[in-house]
Amino acid sequence: MTLHRVSVSLGSNIGDRVANLHAAIESLRDLEHTHLLAASALYETQPRVVEEQPDFINACVVLETRLRPHELLSALLRIEQKMGRVRVLDKGPRTIDLDILLFDQEQINDPDLQIPHPGLCERAFVLVPLREIAPDAIHPTLQRTVAELARDCPDTGWVRKIKR
Image (cartoon, rainbow, N blue to C red; front, side):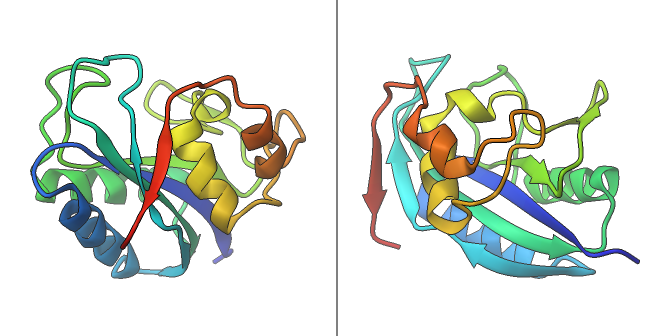
C-alpha cells in the first residue's frame, strides 16, 4: 500500500470552537493507516461567502496515509458526523468542517470530491495555516508553492493566530 501525503483544513464556528478543532485533530491522529505529521497553530478568521455568522477557528494538518482519496473523504465525513456536523446551509455555521486540500499531486474532479480543493487559492483562512506547516507543497495544477499562493492570495479577510 502506497503512502500518501495529504493536507487537510479544519474549521469550526459553533460551540467551543477550539475544543472542536482539538477533538478533530485527535480523531485524525487516530485514523487507521494514517499518521499525523504536522498541525498548524489555530487561527481565528473572518467568515467568508456567508458573512452573517460567528467567526471561525481554522487550522491545517499534514497527514501521511495509506487510505485512497475517497476512503479518506469517507473517514473525514464520519468524523464530522460523530462531532455533530449538520449540513443546513452551504458555507454556513458548523461544528466542524474537514476538507482535503491536497493529496500528493493527485487531481480528482468527481461530484463528491475535488482535489486540489477548488477554493484553496482564494482562501487566506486556509493558506495561512497551511503555509505554516507545508510552505513548499506544490499545487498540482498551478505548479506553485503554498507559500507563493498565500503571498498572492486575493482574500482580504482577517486571519489572527491564537494560542492553542
